[in-house]
Amino acid sequence: MKKMPAVKILQIGNYPPPFCGWAIQTKLLVEEIRKRGHICEVLNLNESRRKKSNEYVDVQNAFDYLQKVIRFALKGYRFQVHVNGQSKPGYLLALVASLVGRVARKPVSLSWHGRGSFLDWLTTVLDWHFSSSSGSPGKSRAIGRP
Image 1 (tube, rainbow, N blue to C red):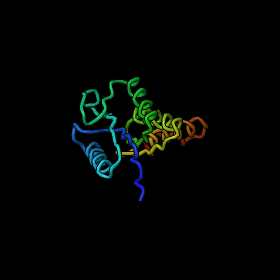
Image 2: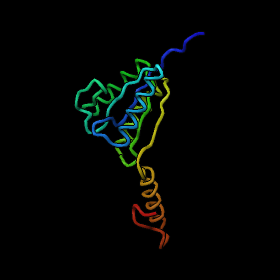
Image 3: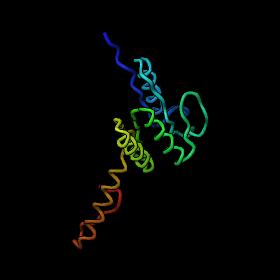
């Protein structure tokens, strides 16, 4: 029986420390993927992202993030991007990884974490803008309210 080649997966998101639900979930996911014989690396976006570690790949700034995402894509990695639903920069980081993965013709998976979302906020703002600019009295409402 022919053995399937190991898949290369890059987890992009929070990784301990600090220990929080989302970071622990990523750590457990990485351990399980490796246990199943695949190659899995982590691009850490947590508060500890600038600290060097052998458990994850550090991220120093936006240019460093872009450079590392491109490098992993060129090495054949698939991306699993964990997005904080309440973080506007997180959506931009996910978009960058998605575009790089698309250009490299590699699958990209997105996971949303947290309550609420930037998309909810954006929908509310657009709804508020268009309903208040229509000139219809009584249709405008405060930003952030449903």
